[in-house]
Length: 108
Image (cartoon, rainbow, N blue to C red; front, side, top):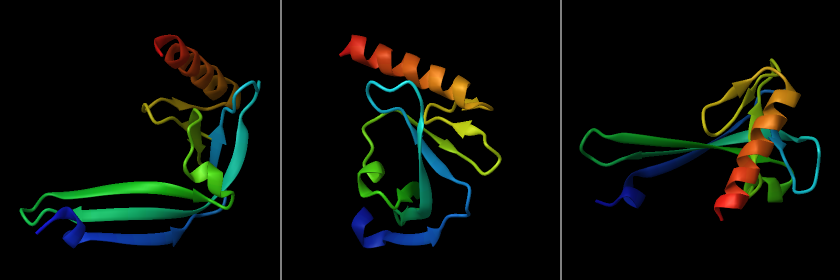
C-alpha cells in the first residue's frame, strides 16, 4: 500500500485572529493576510508510523503558495517563524525575516 492509499485530508475553519504575515520584496513592513482555514494532511504507512502536515489557507490564493519569507501570527499577537523562532512584536519578526531573506539572497 502506498502513502497515497492511506492519506486523508481535512479542512477546518481557523479561529479568528490568525494571520500569515509576509515580507514582500522591497517592503519595510509585514503584510498580514487572514488565515481562514487549516488543511490537515494525515498519512499512515501501515506500520504504525503516522505523519501530519498542517497548511494554512488564506482567502487570497497566491498567499497559500507563498515564496516570500513569512511568520504566522497567532490571536495573542505572537509571531511563529518556520525555523522555530518566535517573536512578541512585528518589529522583531520583521528584522528576523529581513535578515534571513538577505542571507538567502547572498547564498543564492
